[in-house]
Length: 303
Picture 1 (cartoon, rainbow, N blue to C red):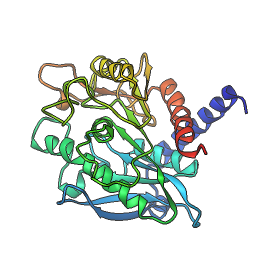
Picture 2: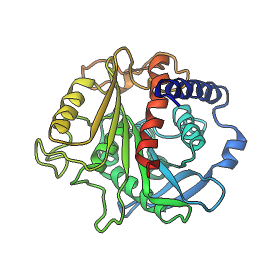
Picture 3: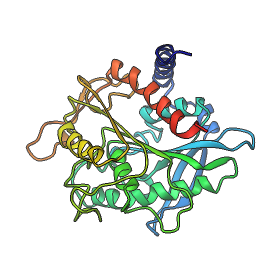
């Protein structure tokens, strides 16, 4: 199938998934389809809760770990936020087992978007959640241990960057197979300053990863601004790191969410900085779904 046609077809599928997610946020039958699992974080303290979409059959398949943003995984009704639900469905439909980790609820946290000790804890310990999730999946007989990707949004995207570098603050010693690839949407903590000492073990200008990384960002994002992230990633790429950055000129934070109205979030404002704003960008979303699925297919399914 020609690439252009494939991209168009996948975009159409993405839009259908978006409408489905908006129309039925979390139905009871979706609850039954998801298996609630528990495993210990590598922080040595937290018993994590995660939601596993597992295909039937014993044939080993690739898998993806999902890491939520600072608002948490669940809404006020205890349902998985539509953004993550839409991606869980899209990834599952492509044949991946999908493990969505709740890092907030098991720690007794609500939102960790505002400054405070809980936010520091999340940045420090969530890379250990990511690798605990990797090891959980690698213990499943129907998962290909060497073909698991890591994917995160906002704070979770920053966790991706903290997890996959060569001096990861979460990777355990003696790991047989690392993540195969990684994806970060509008990642927090995406700057030279926050990815280097004293916040991590990385020397300045030394962030390095062996994993192919795709980062998707809205240029108009007022919550996690693009410029410091773009500068950081361009420098990493210039050092030979396998980094790809896709920028959507008019998109803002949460552009890939299904039917999210434009909403200002003054409670999450950082000092006298701009007020965070979130909203769906239909054009960016229509590109992001097939782009991510093509990236994963190239990294996880290529022989």
